[in-house]
Length: 156
Image 1 (tube, rainbow, N blue to C red):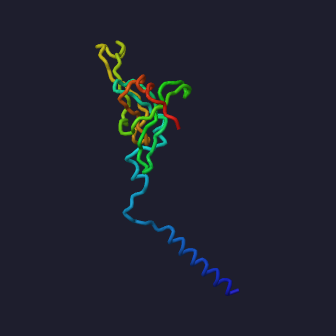
Image 2: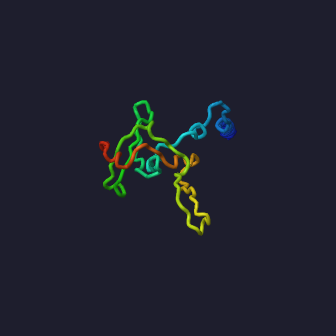
């Protein structure tokens, strides 16, 4: 009987020691992954981001991002035209030629007299994405929709 109690006490002591070992925290200088990555955007969230030209005209949306063998983004696949993906023309453009913008798209529209008695123009926009959401609001690319439709179609 005494030997069983001794074995139980030794087992409890060993288990308690390992529990204390597991609960200690490391104070190393290595930052955690979340804080180290907050400067960028999640690649999975880039798909679907609207693409505009310099005149703030929507020319398509991001369908995919292509990485080279070293893991660097090399191309953006933009879907142009179509409706709900049907009839969409996919084109590949260099990743470095696409500008990612965290701010909402700005467009100038005339306000009605009930909104502004002077009839001046105001800047309006949407609030879709931000750095807090891990994806940009939109992207810009220097081309018209018709120019993109004339590029060779990207095939997976």
